[in-house]
Length: 459
Length: 171
Image 1 (cartoon, chains in turn brown, cyan):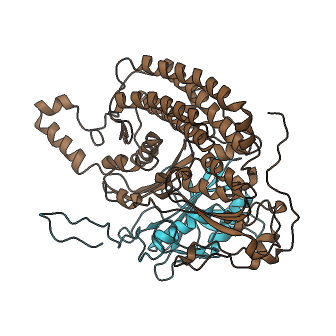
Image 2 (cartoon, helix red, strand yellow; image 1 turned 90 degrees about the vertical axis):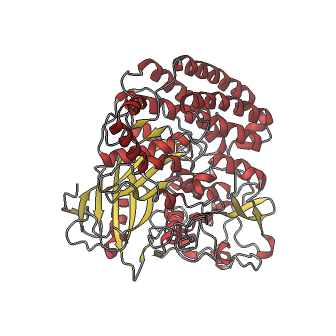
Image 3 (cartoon, chains in turn brown, orange; image 1 turned 60 degrees about the vertical axis):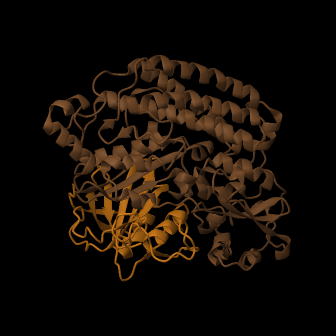
């Protein structure tokens, strides 16, 4: 990666901020507030500062490339989505175009909003994991993990070591499956249908192991407050080793297929670039932040589970463009494989869930012989357990960035407030900055490189 | 928890004295008044908290006597909770500001952290808390013409009418 990269798109002079005063030329619509709001001159004057209020629509940013004094009728606003296949779900984008160059843009979301945070307030902590697991459907185990960690922080319970390591194993395998899925869809967006098939094929291997362990391919409800639902199946070491060996070998096939491929490089290098200051200001995390050269990975910098006991590298980029994000995700698959191999070696024995009768239902065998155990079992699954009053924010590194859970308990068995800080939701704000000054044909690849999962964006 | 102490932060505009507590997760929690809120967050930003990780609202309608608030802070119905993150210090800090029901307005943080744009829109959409200074405070998750703010505690969960059950409850 030695060649110089230039952001694509025509270079024009910056003109006076006059044009920013005008109201965006959206046709009359009943959905008035969904227009692109007019930019403000104050925002324009602060170009170069990271904290700019108008950064949200990309009204400022790389203004140097865009002629601001063009007559209004020369730009066009088009809607992309919500049913466009490349928008990865029901994402709608409003793009302001000058010919083929994207000026401002605005993501319009909410098409998949099902009020999961509200639902979470009606479910007990035992049921809660079944709810949150459906948010980010490509890494469901990470959602369960952050919810369970938040609940356990409120309960103040210590997990057995084996439960922690099983969680770490599943979380890393989930990262692999999520990233190969991303490689698949990103490949498809760039016209590489082979990559799409390969990505799905690799993901299938991981999902088969998930099915064997948790009973389900998605929405597992496997990681629960108090531990995990079941121990790993017999022979799991062999299964996991086969997954690691196969996928690791295939990442080098992807290298041959994409990394050095001239068309792929042309379409990704220098496209959709963002600076580290902008990424931080827009609260972007995960591969977007790391692609700008900021080495921030919660697994290393604020370790949870037992990540301080395994050895891995944090992959960062330099230019913050689509190619860097591709390279980061590809290499993160290799790092996850490295972690999984260490977990296979170091997996401690012991119990897979905490033996706290308040949180843990009695073993199945006890229910047949003890009336009290049956009552206890019944109570855990109907009433749930009481969680001490308090509020807690926990965060983990999901494949998409910082996945946080803000949990408020009022002392009952249901969360008083369950808020999930969804990385896709926050990262989507950097999309207008990434798209600015690029070609509309590259917008598809850039949306994909943000890796939004709409289930998580809209919750 | 709730080991209330008064912490002084020194910044460019002089120290802002706000009450601090410790959350259940051991995080330092600052409790500014609405007037102090923006200045306090600005001071945190100057002190090295580069990014705003999260901003969300809580409606304490049915749980008004919550613990964890320091003395001198009057509990109000709404709370805006901001989680700031410092990469250089590897530290988090939480800011909880009380927002009264009859005047649910707080300052927007968008001039400090542009990343709060979508988060503040979400809180406005789901709680009806307004952020003064936000350039585009519109609904983000719910439809444009939606009435009410769904995450408020007096807003029903919704129910699908089921045969052999009583009449459907509130929306």
